[in-house]
Length: 218
Image 1 (tube, rainbow, N blue to C red):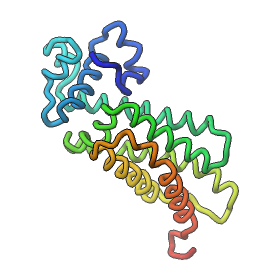
Image 2 (image 1 turned 180 degrees about the vertical axis):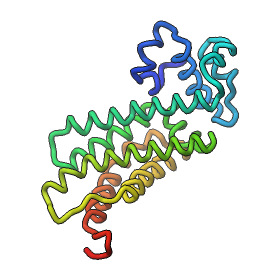
Image 3 (image 1 turned 120 degrees about the vertical axis):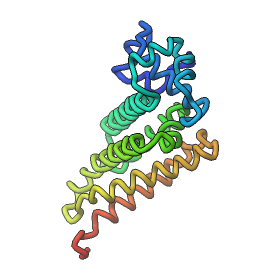
Image 4 (image 1 turned 30 degrees about the horizontal axis):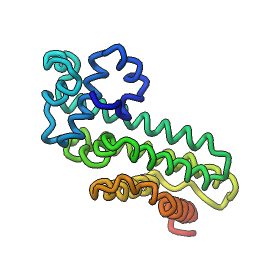
């Protein structure tokens, strides 16, 4: 099997890889298969070949390719969100510095794990409506990270309001879409170059949305 993916860092996966636990190996195998061929073309046979287990073993663990892919996807998102949370907590600066730390970790994690970057940003769209719902849930988790970083700004300026859930979703989805365009263009190595622009845009968006009264005033 190739070098472990982002999914392998999940606490429900990593401890079992060395011992050869079949479910963990199959999750890794699915990530590799989808990275190699894309979701539509990847097969259970590709996943079990990468995991070096039997087809029967796969169906003893998972009902379908979709189920295996979605579990791997959720694990990868868990790891990415936790890394972002840890980076924000470790940052000692103001809320903008914490926001920047989270964005830096998001970009660095995807740049360092091209297989999961493809799964999260590209292949999930080919995996059907359940995968679409999982991606929406992931975007909401990233939106929560923006909410967390922005709380300090609200404490410093009582005239501001927390942007709505929909506004935070728009911000998180917009960031993801820009990164997606880079990945689709084969420019994963340039993601770090987006940090300054994303920070400036996110700060302006959050401060602007927070200054607007949802009833129409300002």
